[in-house]
Image (cartoon, rainbow over all chains, first blue to last red; front, side):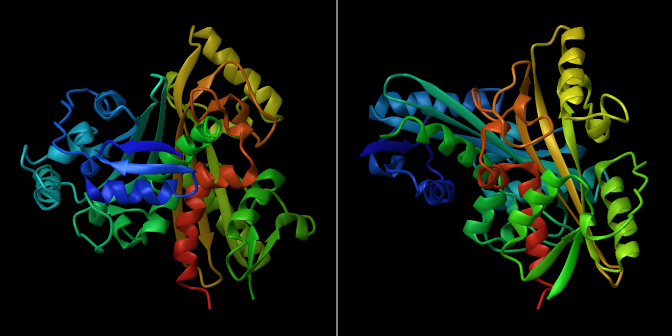
Length: 197
Length: 197
């Protein structure tokens, strides 16, 4: 069975991607299955750049087909920020709590109580023969200052997918069925099916 | 069983929505089930305006809960057009063929061979008690000048969801699982489940 390594150290993302790829005849590994894996330098200016940087980097080091995700939140009232800085919006030692606090602070600073926003995800797959597939997905929603829900991760508790419901109030399967990552994964699965035995 | 009328005369849209709502304990009617139904005046400036206009109009006339869709294609290189004009881009007697020709012509006129684009869908549900739910969905892709595939409708043959695959090459179930309408429907189903017996 073909082995694919997921180029992520974020265990929440690994869980979401594993769930979505269940239907494919592949063995999914994560970076946790390898010893002393260095970090890739994610210095791209776009999600696509960073996803490709990671997939090429970890594909080369593991000698396996590699699937990488780069994703983030784009808030209209903040001119598209945090964007590619989503994971480190509050600094290099950022976590979900400090990032969400920074998001709320930035909106309050400009007197905004809610703003339209997109979550965007780009997936890059680099096969052992060097061929590459890139797919992307988007979900639109509204950022509000009051968090809700304990599921998901990242900015999910502040990302309202309907008037009253946040991304953090969805089950993992519900989230995959409508999320930016779920959409990018569905497109990737269509492409991968064509090249698997 | 609760009856919901779909406020659309587009049989392709009705088919997609019926398929997605299969899991709900509701009876789905369409405007074809009613005699001599006038047209709603869709003069809103946004998808949301138009979806609400239709749901209120046909809800009032049928005295049933009503679900309306407004959706369209937003092409970056055309400043977001055709947008709310998607169904009548080539004029008031437009059809898919003339609209797609207009799309290709407009892009050629400005020397563009491909452009990033979103398909957007807004759904409005107006219940018999007057309460309203609005949900929306988005899918990102690329418009290219060479059409592919015979499925779907509208601009689907020109809307590339991956490097090589168009929306018109998806099965109905595949399309619902990743499309703008599928995402808006998934959000709507979450909300409707809360109010059905």
